[in-house]
Image (cartoon, rainbow, N blue to C red; front, side, top):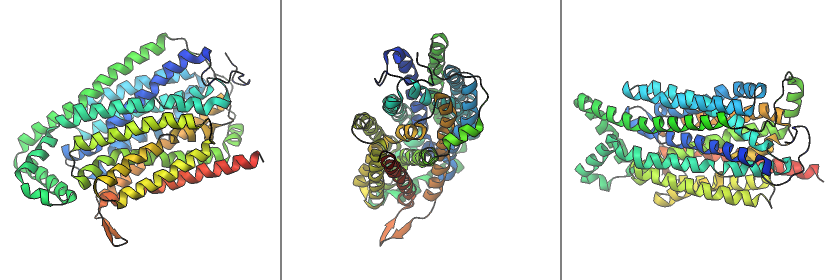
Length: 466
């Protein structure tokens, strides 16, 4: 086992002595991917089940990603004092507890308990990500650290895709609120001659009327739909507890434990550089862009193209398949291209595709929005690796807290986008843009920040080697 303070001379991406630990820890990337992407479609589903505004339903993401911000730094301190394994086990316990809170939330039909459950669940995800990301970086040579993390992160979309499939196959098609929409469309043939955004507004009005005129029937519909939402969370809680048992009985390498007091002065000096501070900022904007694109693609498909929720979620799945494929391709490209340069190029691609989704009508616009996922695939692990480059494992534990805290971008930005969707739209360059289109200027701006970070890191590295 290598010392955290001595160089590792085995330059394979995953040295043989770390292979079992790498495989076991990599399963965690899929677990938090599942939680992220089974939750995204609930923003739209809760909008209709509870008959609340887009901004209010976006509180799902506020609670979900707010949990990261609350627990990232405490998690880093606990992990530093104990070990990566201890942090992972705490995280798995909190993950299961939060998922199980959906049971009382469903039985009591209480939106706020759902929010509490998501908040606690992401306490666990904060522990898992704060532990797993630097743990993977430490499993071998620093020269292959970014490639190693990209390889591990490549399995995150597998969990995400599984979450999306569960939402698409088992949650959204079985919601009676969706069946209500279908029956209303069938009963109003005139809707075929109207814009999808107009039809969507009329369907929401019909739901509100139904809740007022038939409160008992509406209550039964809500009860049914919340039970449908709850079942996958109860099931994943069981899976998480089984993984917790596996970690409890496994011997894991300790690549960075120490009992010495934290030298805050030295830590701050090590972190006070553009790579790290800029990385935290870039990560905040990246997570915001990712969550906005994946959460509101359903709104885009339903409001602008006229799809059902389940159909729109299928396009989200297509985006995730592209994301997964691109992650493996980009991990390969890192063998030949500077990480910052590739990051900047992909951010420019994400910007152009987002702008195309704003200005191009119909299915072509939706295809552009799907294409954004191909550009996003590399971003999280690459920013993470660049920001922590050169840190010892123990400094990386605390440095990683800032990068996990940056996930708070996923709490604030979807809320702002939800408020934009509740707006009235705008006219730009003579073209009327519906509020859903206008809202995507937010992720477009995020890609500008990420591109600047990638290109500036490349320039600084070239100067250092000049």
